[in-house]
Image 1 (cartoon, rainbow over the protein chains, first blue to last red):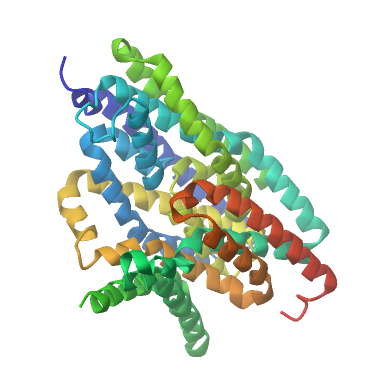
Image 2 (spheres, chains in turn brown, green):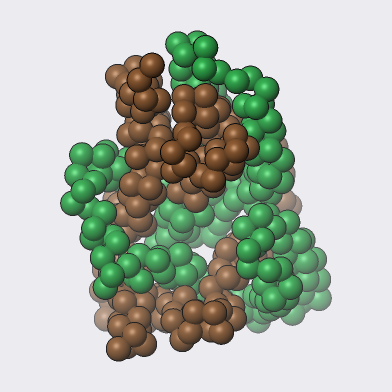
Length: 249
Length: 221
């Protein structure tokens, strides 16, 4: 019997993964078309909608690049097709890596990079990575309509309260996702002064957004506002690089 | 058919088809290589993953759905990378149009942004498949690496500031909660407890926000 990687890199798995990716690609286009038509229906300016599309395309480039690192981490052990599928569709870098290693550990290995990896464990990883994450789309399938219906009812009754509730939700989301970065200075004893970088980046990108929005208002040039998000992201990244250089010097 | 009904119909049908296509992969691979399949230990692995992720999944659906909108929710949960890609893209699109989350305009901005973000990620990963040996050294270059390592805090800062400016009083309760939780939960288990932390913070934030609204403390913002 050949290596399990022969199966992981087989044409069959390649075709199965490509089918899913092509389907979701088409799904995204259909959704965009539907939203575009809806935008026209409710009177949104086409130029503004085009700006939303451009802004999202420009913004999405930078966060997509680190996902390649996860692809590189998983490909030697899970073949090229399955990690490609999971990182393009449904999964996320951290989840895929964690679940693959968790499954390998249940089979008595240290991680997926353990020389003991075989076809049995590879098949188990296919199952655990697939079924572990399916719950979210299944829940959206049955629950999303009711969540949105509830929000719609609240919006109809009291728009101002709805705005308060949505702001509380968004701010809570960002603060919990950002909590490890806001308190990153706690890691100073372990990693030194570089521990403050995430907090500084968070503050500088926030200030950059503010500054670009003010600049747009002051100059009347909407381009500053349109690209404030991707520009702030780049500004934050450059700050991290510069600060790391200064601290490490 | 009105938009709300048709987007749910489209979302449900396309999600169901995508799920079938995704699940057929382990099914077909297992049928083809059945001799190597260990049902007992595979079921154990799946059960362990589910035990860890069920609370995370439920919390993410409840908290992300209102932010992503109707169409955005269906698309984001099938395309993945939500907190680091789809949510920021959606928020950025809504901010660009200057619309309130939950409005009809926000729904359009969210779907457009998530759709394009999905396509860009797919294209970059498809290119990456063939040129990985050239692209990864850029991301992992010692000088550039701190930049790529800090994408998430940069995103959070850029997303958060608009809400702070719009309604600074509403940030107090969730900020206090986030700080308390961050200082009490050990960093090693933060990832696993993030779902519960989020749910608790949202509940406290809602209660405080509604009290502030009812007392008229937000009126001057």
